[in-house]
Length: 419
Image (cartoon, rainbow, N blue to C red):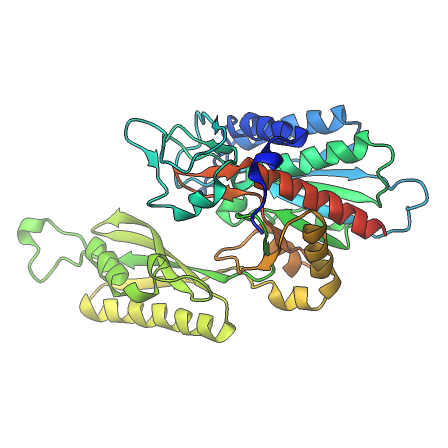
């Protein structure tokens, strides 16, 4: 059954959720994959410090923001429920660098009518390009001005956790076990859990709010590696280059051209993996290429790793005297195996969504989250929808109704873990 978007968007929580997302989105928190430090950008501190202030204003006394911008807040159990398992909720404060996150200007589209939404003179959010928008007639949408991303990934998740926590703390009749709230930096760079204070965490299970469309429950993600290729050539004046020049830029270009086009992100979906060149730089003497390797299956990932090694050898053969150096570090693993070992964590999530009036369904994450890393570290952490759409794009938007549903799902999860 289609949700009653108009009724959901009219609920009191909808206004608070929209206001929070608007407030958080205006704070620039773009992370930088080229910076080794965590956090990689100073703007992430601004949102994290605001969240500390807001948590304390809600009455949370146990709040820690460490030297690497990891925020952990703990809420003691209601009297008599101290023995219940501690459950955590997680979201990340940074936004992707694919599109600018500076000067974000969110606005609401009330009672969406199914027609194209003009964001700016040159940018249109059009159902002809994004047909799922037609499902949201009557809803309230939050959009950008077409110049930046919105940052619903993952500030919608932050807003939903904070709004739900406010309800728990203000309503003295709301019974709950011990809770942990975790907001992390640098998720978008893949380093969000590198310095996470795991030893201090008490949660036996956690839930990331970092998904997209309403009802999506994600317990399976890519296994991820990065192929970092360095091409070493020999430079000489182009006027005297015959038989002497080994152009590292040409080597890098050839390497990228040999990646299978039928196995690129734009040519695959569902459970199909890919090769994705995401950065190329250099000059005739030295060039570099970074390629994402993604797949759900371990054997398929081994094939991809062997393929990029073979392509590197082929480039060396094409360019006598040139050298290709490869590093292929692991980024994260598919969390499915670990989550399958603790089925109750997912069962509670599906039940919570149904109690919240949502029809949940499983969908693989064509990417990863801090939750997939945390699962690998021993705390099972599936991913929950947030109502954000078109992530990492100028056409990013959020459904306020689905934000309400995510908020409700968090509350139902808290109740279920206290039963």
